[in-house]
Length: 115
Length: 110
Image (cartoon, rainbow over all chains, first blue to last red):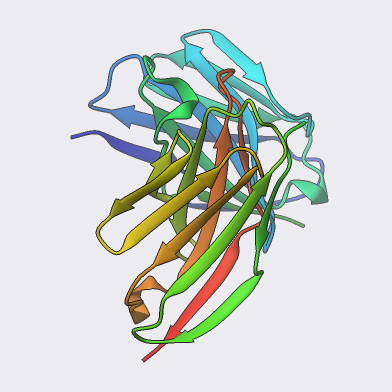
């Protein structure tokens, strides 16, 4: 069975500090990977997607970057946090052959508070 | 840019009621529509999807898609308190981009 882990579970950071959030998928080779952001009470917004190692496509610019260093790992980062980065960050995967038109499996999320 | 709107914003119903949730989208070329359920502080979980005009039933869930009117609806029969959650409509294209709707918060009272 496939499992998806995100770390950390929650983070409190200062404005201007760097950030790195991680996501790992076990039990599934060559998945499509996605990063989403959800402001408190807001809409779930797709940030990035990746269909293969080393390749990441940006969907919306929020002064964040993403990388896929391994087949099963997706990293979200920024060198300088803004207050507007606060929210709930979710990683998801889908079967590569089917793409985003098919079911996405979400991780438990990381709650980020920027002060 | 695809836009996805959901209605109503929130809904309170008694246990056993039929629940109807609506979703309107803007791109007629959208490939698939998914409905997700999200509990507070958790990641969304997929419930049911539809690709072609018409309807699809799975258990207590029925989804209807009308591509001409760019509208999809989800109906939950015999609602239970455990159905209380936020319901999200998600529209996908063939470019790996997914647009989620604004969500409907459902509360089912025992």
